[in-house]
Length: 135
View 1 (tube, helix red, strand yellow):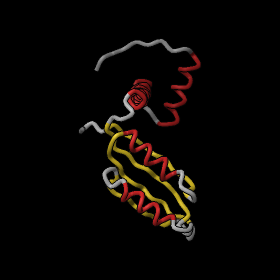
View 2 (tube, rainbow, N blue to C red; view 1 turned 45 degrees about the horizontal axis):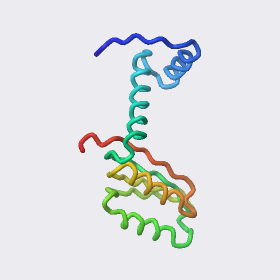
View 3 (cartoon, rainbow, N blue to C red; view 1 turned 135 degrees about the vertical axis):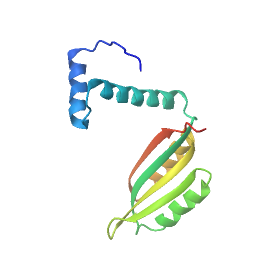
View 4 (cartoon, rainbow, N blue to C red; view 1 turned 135 degrees about the horizontal axis):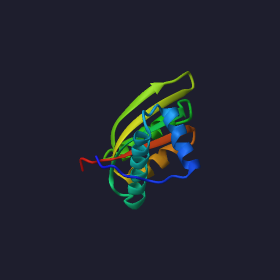
């Protein structure tokens, strides 16, 4: 590991310290390393939108909505090259949650997630992307 000296203004350092307390970091170095990784990941996604990624799309929907489960299944089949697996969970009488594991170009995974999440009667949707370092 390399030692790096940085200068932070008081307000920014207070935010780092608050983050440390909230997340249970043992020291500032651990917090700043995680923040740097997160910022680099975001910068890579911004500069290379088609970079290979793996991801998880989590969404909650009304299972009684007309034809929605069929449309969601058809959508996954239409994108079988991106979809690795789907976990289906019955949350209550009215709602289901699905977690779809994806692999492909980041831009394609974001487009897939947008199509699913914006479907009528999908109540919530969130995509988490991670660079695919094995590619």
